[in-house]
Image (cartoon, rainbow over all chains, first blue to last red):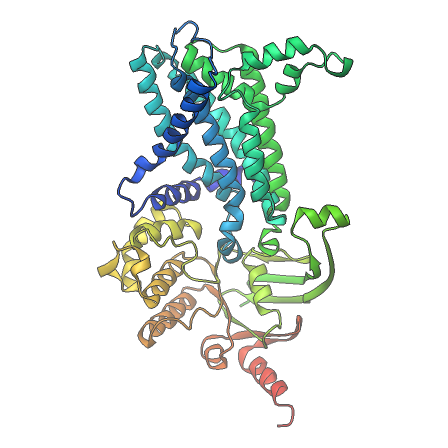
Length: 278
Length: 246
């Protein structure tokens, strides 16, 4: 409890470090903040070309929204993913990258990984706002779902923060973590129904039946990936424009709280040793 | 002066000296261990009290454990054994300008650095003019700090740190910065500090500085406390240990 108070007490520092990241990032570029939209836009073009037109990923149209635009469907999953992956990868480097600060000044170290969440969230808000406008123009009734969408975004941010904390500590002791992480994240995106619809997995799973003679199905295994549920939440809110299944909310909440809880425990345990370990 | 500002109580700090350090997963897994090491005692059972309102010097040769002790005082390292208690707000100046962002302006960096050092936005706003005035960079305050000369950079960092306004100030040898005029300003600021009844703990290699500023001193040698007491006699003991023949 005392630790939480300490973290809360550093919120002003958190805000300042976040704005350092945000303001420092696009200094001296001509397009400034617009660059933060460039990456998801490029990914969207590539994936739409490859998986929308060539491989024909063919997701079901939004129900009940009736939307049937691959690019929009893709972005509803892709934007939360890029946020998650940027929090985790920049979070992993946050302690090592600020080792000078950690060795010279005493402050609540946890603000360093947290500030990367703030900086990534700031960009994500922009991206999501643009996506909401695009969906509205395409005829989706997404605006009434904004409050729930914000809740879902907060849940994902909490989950990402927890995972980021774990990797930030791991990276201090094993510098391999950052390289390993790039590979893990690449695998992870393909294990999540972002560029293909989950119905494909479900169909494959029911055709295979129980794996190795157990009642465990492929889909059951696949569902262990928390990002599956987060993506489902965002797709249902933004693309389908409907109230997501209650169970999805609960699963996401549990993952978010578990990740943050474990992340903070591990962080706290190692925090005092950071100045020496770096 | 019966009050104590900082109590250092049987502080022991050891570091691991690694003969082989495996910061990679491969070696950790292949060998089933992460390191081979032995402990090195940087501070060995050091105890002393710093009286409130004093200016306290830490002296000793290189590698004597001064900086380790300073980092323990600043809550950056944590002692393996023993405890450090301090009465009042403590601030450390181990490096100036920590956390400056080169692309941001001096003004933005004042707020950023201030909050890293534990000042609230209100504090910084209140002291802003004083900080700028002290640093002497008014003219360039809206320029990115990467365009500052190294002297300006350090002066700005120092001006922020000195305005944190703690009860106990812990200073590493950052005094050796800036030109003579700025150094004079710094000394004056420390004198003001003393007059306000605050405590300064100072690490320095310059015996003149310690003699001029400190009323108490502690002498460390190879992690062990050799002598603690009035500055003059501690310095004399340290110097005579360096010239045993005289």
